[in-house]
Image (cartoon, rainbow, N blue to C red; front, side):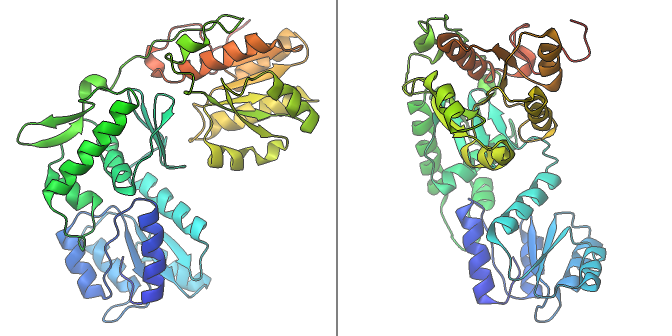
Length: 392
C-alpha cells in the first residue's frame, strides 16, 4: 500500500489486517518501487496523489516493467475523465474516498479472485473447508476458531495445493515486512493449527512437515472420502451420520412464506439435531447466505412453484453458491414440477404433507453428501441437475 495520508493508511491497514491480509505500508512512490521489487505482492493499493510521482505514473511504470499483480487506485477525485486515465494507465479498479468499508474489501477480494483465477471461492482439502467470503473454516461440520495469522497461514497452504513452503516463505507471505518475526513463530503457529485440526478430528499430520524443506497439506488427505450413513426415516441413523457427535449439526437455511409457515417448517427440525436459520423474505436470501454460510438450503412450498425453481437456477448460476445443496418442497406430486425442480438444480424434492423424520433424514444425507468430492459421489444420491436434459 502506497499512501501518504496517515489517516487513510490507518483505515485501510486496519481493514486489511482484520481480514487476515498482511499489508506493507510506504508513503512515497520511490519506497513503493523498492518494496515491489523486493517482495512478491498479490495486490498493490496506490493513492493517486503521492509525493515524487503520482499514482497514475507509478502504475504506468509498474506495467512498463512487466508487473502483472492487480493494482487498486484510491483517490478523492470522482470524475469520469480521471477514472479513464487511471484505468488506461493499467489500474484494475478505482475507489473514491470516502469509501464504504464493505465495498472496499469486496473490491479487494474480487481483484484477488481474478488474479488467482478463482471461480469458486471455497477452498477444500479432504474434510477441511475454508470459505473466504465469510472467513470461516470447517473441518467436517466443526467450525474452527482460528486467529487471523492461523487463518492466513491455512489459506496460503490451501491456495497452493501440494506446494511446500519454507518457514521463511511463510513469513514473507503471511507477516508484514515491519513485524520482523522469527522462523520459530511459524513453527508455533503450525503447532497451534495442528492441535485445532486434531481436536476437530483431523489426522496429526494433516499439515505435513517435509524434512529440511518446510510445510504443506498432506497429499494423502486431499481426497479422503467421508463415510456417509443415511439415517432411517425414524431418525435412528442420525448419530451415525453425524460421526457420533450430535454437536456437529448441519446449518440449514429454511425459507418460508410467512412467520406461521416458517414456524411450521422449523417444528420438523429438532434444535438438538439441526441448526436452523429462518427467512420469510426470499429476496433477502443472498444477504442471508453471506452472513450465515449454511450447509444446505430448504425451500418451503411457495404459492407459485416457479418462485422456488427461480431461486434454484440463481443459486446454480452463482459461482459462490452453485455447489450448495438445495431441497425444494412441492405441494403436488406432479411429474412436471418434479422434473422442473431437478432441471433447475435442486438436489432433492419433498412433497406436502411433510413427514418430519423423513425430512430430517434427507437434510442430513444431503449435508453429508456435500462433503464428498463430486467425482467420488455415488450415483443416484441427489447430485445437482442429475436429470437435466434427460427424459423422465
